[in-house]
Length: 474
Image (cartoon, rainbow, N blue to C red; front, top):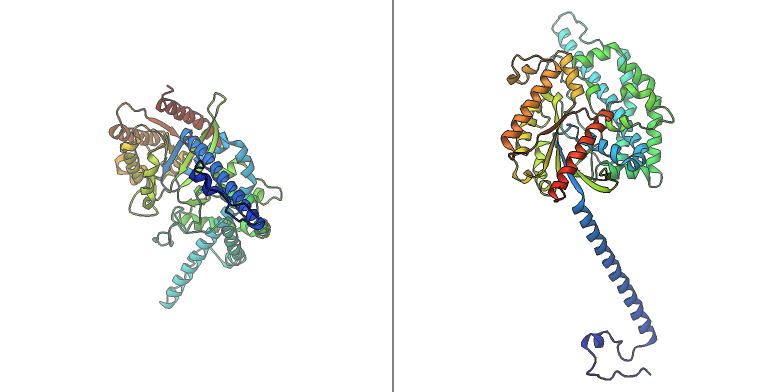
């Protein structure tokens, strides 16, 4: 018989409360001790989690935090890829093979885009021919495309399913905009920023997407990639026949479809990409397009240059106008802001509002950033990006003053145009920013990995100097 507990005034209430109940059986005691042991484990786990959270909070506070801003398709993700490739090579190497699925999707998307343009052109020509015959007029060929092109289009239709499979592999998709612009006798004009674009919801950008591909569940992802590779390979000859066809190129030119300047263009690399042992190169990964929605957070461990590792957190926020209100909360804690201004967009309009010139919108956005009080002590760095495409456009004869009247009758060569744009950014900067602030700018083509690596070295130094000053180390 279990002894009865005697009241003892010397025992404190907590000890009495924790004492085993009177008349406790051996089974009850075993159950109580088991529950107490489980409660102790939960308590220790919570303590450990709180300790890790405290360490993570301190680590985050000590990290260099950089916000990358700019319009949609201004080169933000490509800039972040360059950061990782240059300063976080271990993670870059681990992710390399996983980019293959993204590049295959980019390749298929380019093919289906061409197929759509050719199909629309042939349908429009048939409609106009039927109307002409109905009026009694002699029908004239309205397109260089013929039955051979129609057969190629039909055979390439199998890639529609492959496109859907690859999108399922990468994640749920969404369209950025609804339809291309309409206009002109040649049908809707192609605009790479206005085509329906697949996007993946993710809070850590491409990283968790690539992790899922690298660590497939039940082999489903591996099978999807294998099937996609086989089907695309079986279509290789038709893809090359279509892409190298003079009539197809003529139609694309008339529709102003400069696919080569679009993100994720790999049609000129099809033989290399479809080789059995293909592994994406650095340049392939930088050029690959995988649009993510929402705010992306990338954490890299970079070297300060004095053999001390430091964490960098880089934020990429949506560039479309409707998402810009989400930028404000990130202004408070950041060390630096990299602003992407795509100079090549001087002759383009916003996908969200075709009435607004893209470069003029960039100037307005730059003015807003420079004048924001929350950014008064933040180092702002300007990347005047896509200079390679700017050069191609100017060399093709596109006149800046036809799209930006303020340029007037200045020489239309690259040096004159680029430096004029730089002067505008500089003038807006000093007119709207804190007095005494340094203007830091770089002409960039972030798909050029070697040149961008040199630029990033200078940027890293500028950001760390700012970090040292803000923390009182300088």
